[in-house]
Length: 120
Image 1 (cartoon, rainbow, N blue to C red):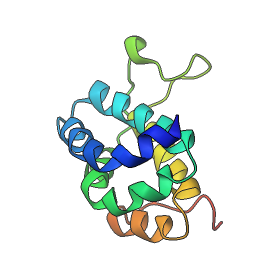
Image 2 (image 1 turned 90 degrees about the vertical axis):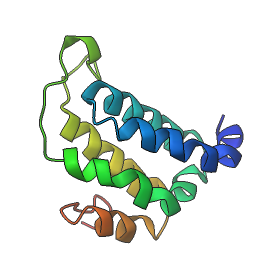
Image 3 (image 1 turned 60 degrees about the vertical axis):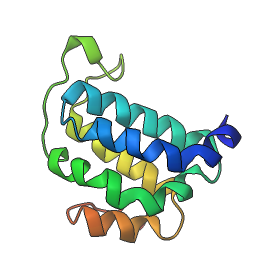
């Protein structure tokens, strides 16, 4: 549950950053899904991640506009196939929704092309 995740977020950042820095599509896909689950699992987790955006978002920026098909083995959902770019956008939107009032400006700083899903 979220109460167990919150205290260990600082220890999770380096492994998350290391995995993202592999720049391997399936690995990034898995990390994005884990981040999404983390953010929605507890009240303060989204906000607790904001100070670490500078460490985890640079790779998002590299892959955000890449619409690579993730292939049969790693379909994100049964209903429709998602590209890595779609998954990144979805993760950023969850970060913004759950990250508190400073989330958007921090995302925008790291990913200038990001458009708010809350402000519009």
